[in-house]
Amino acid sequence: MKSTLPTSHGYEPKDAKIASPFPKSAFVDAKKPAFVSNFEFVGSVDTSPYLCVPAALKWRENLGGEDVIMKYCTTLAQDGAKLVAQIFGTEVMQNSTNTLGNCCLSNIRLPISVYTAQQHALQAGMETSEVGAAVRDWMSKTSVEEYDTFVQSLFYNGAWWVRLSGQVYLGMEDMEWAGRTLLGICERVNAGEWV
Image (tube, rainbow, N blue to C red; front, top):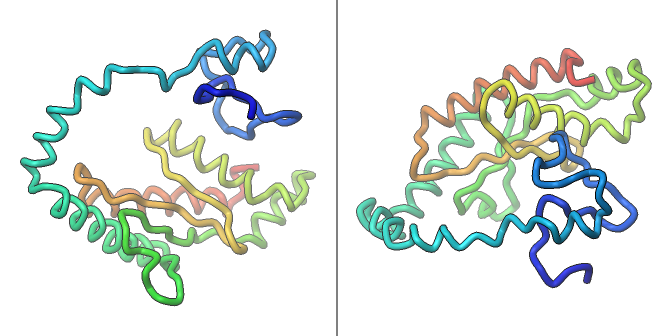
């Protein structure tokens, strides 16, 4: 165990670098040793959120309570995933018992050609084994910098997937926006813009 404290912006695994499309945090001085950076700033030590708890509980109660919130978020994630998969012309990730989506999260296969991405990588002198992470990181960076949003994507079982979450402050119009925005980003990936 490297630390008894929660790690934060300065954490680096032993003998490795964290692969991230984002620049190092402003809270970390890159000139300092990793050991110092790991302990110098611990972002999770912040007691101010406790002050919000009474107002947050009241707000959730005004929405109808936890059961209503969970039903709304799960339904939005499921229906939103179907809509986004339709926009993509792909599928929603599901298990054999059709229970994978019984929560507030859904994963939808992105319409990105692995073969085309590998060809772009080869032309750029990249190893094809790096393509999954490189495309994922480019998509994350592009979504933040150009669309003021972040979506979690991953390369799994030979395809890229995006995870969408149902939240009480979102609606189907947000899911549709995400689908259309991601479709445009995927078209740029297929064109090789990520290389």
